[in-house]
Amino acid sequence: MFFADCHTHSVCSPDSEVPMVRMAQKACEYGLTHLTLTDHCDLLSIEGVPTPEYDWAPVLKERKAMLDAFGTRIDLPMGVELGMGFLFPETTRKILSQPGLDFVIGSAHNLSQEAGGRDFFLLDYATLENCYRALDNYFRSMLALAAAPEFYDVVGHIIYPLRYMKGDYPTPPSTDRYRDEIFEICRLAAEAGKGIEINTWKGQTLAEWIPVLKLFKEAGGEIVTVGSDAHAPGPVGRGIREAYQIMQDCGFRYAAVYHERKPDMIRL
Image (cartoon, rainbow, N blue to C red):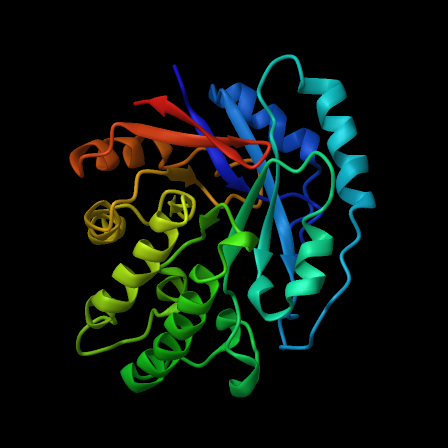
């Protein structure tokens, strides 16, 4: 039975220390049929400094070891999570010209350069005002990302900053006020033949995706991938099956996995 985790990270991401081969081992133990390693290529650093170079050599070395060990047991497409690629078109085209690349998640992890460019992980979310100031900035970047479909196959974790907003608020921060922006992101992706992802954040975000999926469906979208965003073996695959059920409840009958930058649509 189809069971794919399309968003995971290894030692080739700055926030993981786990070899790809261990991620694949866990995926096999967990019963996955597909595992896509999508290590970070962020064109702004965590502090907002442009980082226009990306070295594929460590990725390819890790990938060879993984394929040698598990390539006959599980499908292992080659992916990348590209952060803020729309800011640097020529650099992004060069990075994505890597032969053998199967899948590109387009993400916005940082504030705009005008706002300092820091990663949303670093921001102060002590007040609701701070939260919504960050979300205002985030959705402006996400609209710019969605409008550059050359640089992604799916739009990554549309509700990303919410995972860091854990203060003692009178009401929790919500994306409700960004319905129009989310719909436009979905429309731009759908009309370009691109998709979105359900990012379960290691099984911690599931119901939060229902309104996003409904907007994507309304916008004519069909392509949805699901990923755990695991940075270690333990969370690999978490929330994936539950996400498939949510997709079905929202009217989607297929989940996607990418090969050669094209979606294979698998019946749920």
